[in-house]
Image (cartoon, rainbow, N blue to C red; front, side, top):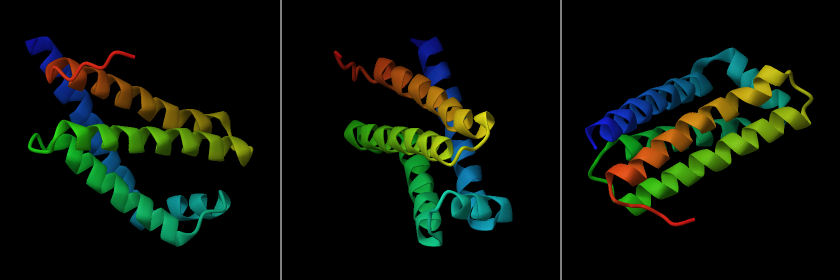
Length: 125
Protein backbone atom coordinates (compact mmCIF):
# COMPACT_ATOMS: atom_id res chain seq x y z
CA UNK A 1 0.00 0.00 0.00
CA UNK A 2 2.87 2.38 0.77
CA UNK A 3 4.33 1.77 -2.70
CA UNK A 4 0.95 2.58 -4.24
CA UNK A 5 0.76 5.90 -2.38
CA UNK A 6 4.29 6.82 -3.45
CA UNK A 7 3.46 6.10 -7.09
CA UNK A 8 0.17 8.01 -6.77
CA UNK A 9 1.77 11.13 -5.27
CA UNK A 10 4.77 11.03 -7.60
CA UNK A 11 2.65 10.82 -10.76
CA UNK A 12 0.02 13.25 -9.47
CA UNK A 13 2.64 15.75 -8.32
CA UNK A 14 4.56 15.58 -11.59
CA UNK A 15 1.36 15.74 -13.64
CA UNK A 16 0.06 18.74 -11.69
CA UNK A 17 3.39 20.54 -11.98
CA UNK A 18 3.29 19.99 -15.75
CA UNK A 19 -0.26 21.35 -15.87
CA UNK A 20 0.71 24.46 -13.86
CA UNK A 21 3.64 25.07 -16.23
CA UNK A 22 1.42 24.41 -19.23
CA UNK A 23 -1.19 26.89 -18.00
CA UNK A 24 1.49 29.51 -17.35
CA UNK A 25 2.77 29.04 -20.90
CA UNK A 26 -0.77 29.41 -22.26
CA UNK A 27 -0.80 32.91 -20.75
CA UNK A 28 2.76 34.00 -21.53
CA UNK A 29 4.49 32.04 -24.31
CA UNK A 30 4.09 33.58 -27.78
CA UNK A 31 4.65 30.14 -29.33
CA UNK A 32 1.67 28.71 -27.42
CA UNK A 33 -0.51 31.68 -28.33
CA UNK A 34 0.38 31.23 -31.99
CA UNK A 35 -0.20 27.47 -31.68
CA UNK A 36 -3.77 28.02 -30.53
CA UNK A 37 -4.38 30.41 -33.41
CA UNK A 38 -2.88 27.86 -35.83
CA UNK A 39 -5.39 25.28 -34.59
CA UNK A 40 -8.24 27.76 -35.08
CA UNK A 41 -8.96 28.42 -31.41
CA UNK A 42 -9.72 31.83 -29.95
CA UNK A 43 -7.70 33.63 -27.29
CA UNK A 44 -10.67 33.26 -24.97
CA UNK A 45 -10.53 29.47 -25.25
CA UNK A 46 -6.77 29.46 -24.57
CA UNK A 47 -7.26 31.48 -21.37
CA UNK A 48 -10.27 29.43 -20.32
CA UNK A 49 -8.30 26.20 -20.80
CA UNK A 50 -5.38 27.58 -18.77
CA UNK A 51 -7.68 28.44 -15.87
CA UNK A 52 -9.34 25.01 -16.08
CA UNK A 53 -5.92 23.31 -15.96
CA UNK A 54 -4.94 25.31 -12.87
CA UNK A 55 -8.19 24.44 -11.11
CA UNK A 56 -7.93 20.77 -12.12
CA UNK A 57 -4.34 20.50 -10.89
CA UNK A 58 -5.32 22.04 -7.54
CA UNK A 59 -8.23 19.61 -7.22
CA UNK A 60 -5.93 16.64 -7.84
CA UNK A 61 -3.30 17.87 -5.36
CA UNK A 62 -5.49 18.88 -2.41
CA UNK A 63 -6.56 15.80 -0.42
CA UNK A 64 -9.62 17.59 1.03
CA UNK A 65 -11.49 17.53 -2.27
CA UNK A 66 -14.04 14.68 -2.47
CA UNK A 67 -13.30 11.71 -4.70
CA UNK A 68 -16.17 12.55 -7.06
CA UNK A 69 -14.70 16.01 -7.74
CA UNK A 70 -11.29 14.44 -8.40
CA UNK A 71 -12.89 11.99 -10.84
CA UNK A 72 -14.42 14.94 -12.71
CA UNK A 73 -10.98 16.57 -12.88
CA UNK A 74 -9.48 13.35 -14.26
CA UNK A 75 -12.27 13.15 -16.85
CA UNK A 76 -11.82 16.78 -17.86
CA UNK A 77 -8.10 16.36 -18.34
CA UNK A 78 -8.65 13.17 -20.32
CA UNK A 79 -11.11 14.84 -22.68
CA UNK A 80 -8.73 17.78 -23.08
CA UNK A 81 -5.76 15.60 -24.05
CA UNK A 82 -7.72 13.49 -26.51
CA UNK A 83 -9.18 16.64 -28.09
CA UNK A 84 -5.71 18.20 -28.30
CA UNK A 85 -4.30 15.17 -30.09
CA UNK A 86 -7.23 15.19 -32.52
CA UNK A 87 -6.86 18.95 -33.14
CA UNK A 88 -3.17 18.54 -33.97
CA UNK A 89 -3.97 15.60 -36.23
CA UNK A 90 -6.69 17.57 -38.04
CA UNK A 91 -4.25 20.46 -38.56
CA UNK A 92 -1.70 18.07 -40.13
CA UNK A 93 0.81 18.94 -37.42
CA UNK A 94 3.99 16.90 -36.89
CA UNK A 95 3.64 13.56 -35.11
CA UNK A 96 5.36 14.92 -31.99
CA UNK A 97 2.55 17.48 -31.57
CA UNK A 98 -0.03 14.71 -31.82
CA UNK A 99 1.76 12.35 -29.42
CA UNK A 100 2.58 14.90 -26.68
CA UNK A 101 -1.00 15.17 -25.33
CA UNK A 102 -1.19 11.38 -25.33
CA UNK A 103 2.01 11.29 -23.25
CA UNK A 104 0.24 13.47 -20.65
CA UNK A 105 -2.72 11.10 -20.88
CA UNK A 106 -0.50 8.20 -19.77
CA UNK A 107 0.53 10.13 -16.62
CA UNK A 108 -3.13 10.88 -16.02
CA UNK A 109 -4.11 7.21 -16.31
CA UNK A 110 -1.37 6.12 -13.90
CA UNK A 111 -2.38 8.80 -11.40
CA UNK A 112 -6.05 7.84 -11.67
CA UNK A 113 -5.31 4.12 -11.36
CA UNK A 114 -3.31 4.61 -8.16
CA UNK A 115 -5.83 7.14 -6.85
CA UNK A 116 -8.47 4.43 -7.07
CA UNK A 117 -6.16 1.88 -5.42
CA UNK A 118 -5.17 4.12 -2.52
CA UNK A 119 -8.65 5.45 -1.74
CA UNK A 120 -10.54 2.18 -2.02
CA UNK A 121 -12.43 3.92 -4.78
CA UNK A 122 -12.18 0.89 -7.03
CA UNK A 123 -14.45 0.92 -10.04
CA UNK A 124 -15.48 -2.23 -11.83
CA UNK A 125 -15.32 -1.52 -15.53
